[in-house]
Image (cartoon, rainbow, N blue to C red; front, side, top):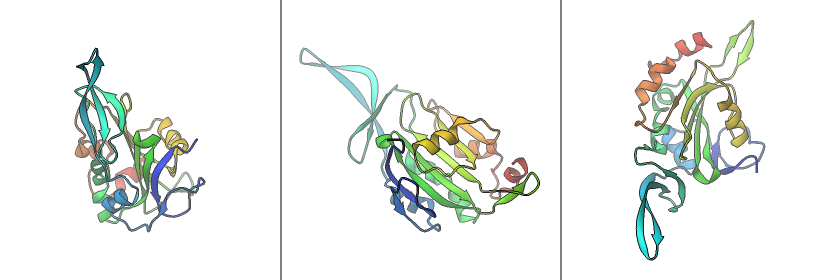
Length: 206
């Protein structure tokens, strides 16, 4: 199915596929995490194969979800997962300062990709009066070969199609990170130009 939604929560208009839990737009990031069914972690577990009754390590790690022990992907030893709670903590300052509100969040492809989307509260005008509704998207894949992607987007993410569309373009207002190093939220905010608590720099760029 095109939506590929496993769990999700949303504020505002019901998504086209009708899935997910409706929530108020005043939730904290941690509350949104729970409502969206994303309060689980992933752990790297050594994998083995059975050869003639002998358990032999493959040299790879199984990425295992804590909620149901499902294997999300096979990864290398130096692959660093970004936990869901880390992705949602990224929004804390913006939400608590009143600059953003948590808008949608969910799990796609049985947990292989998790997203969180916050709406920038103050819409603004560019190019002679066009009103822009903007969102800050955090795409957090639990899958080998996929990068963490954090960006501003005009697209309201509610499914796999809208997430794919949001991630398709390139912009100065985006950061992509591989999993070879640990997630550094301060570096990401600095790169996006939103290290301060207010979003004036972002609006100037947009």
